Length: 106
Image (cartoon, rainbow, N blue to C red):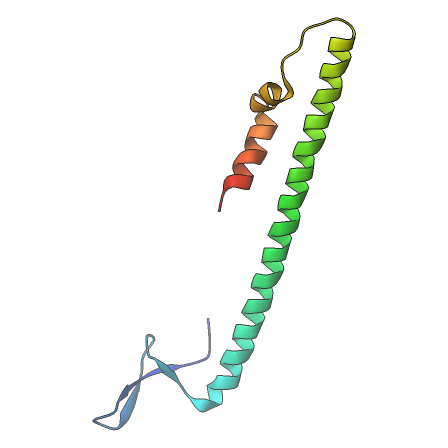
């Protein structure tokens, strides 16, 4: 995965041993490690922004569904009919249930 070698230091023996769980890297690998960290941070920032954008779109979708149901309910009531509340209809809509569940996930 990475060409950066990690090292474990035995100071009392004044030796260093290559170790996958070591706490140290060689100076020549430091710039590569920093570059890799910067790249990963940029990817994380981009992914976080995409998540925020998608969540905003899902919330807008919920508003559109609510407004559509409200318009239909108002029309039914306007013609003298009886209709469930918008929230009740949304609570039973499989798409709304999925969107709400997706928005609740951490």
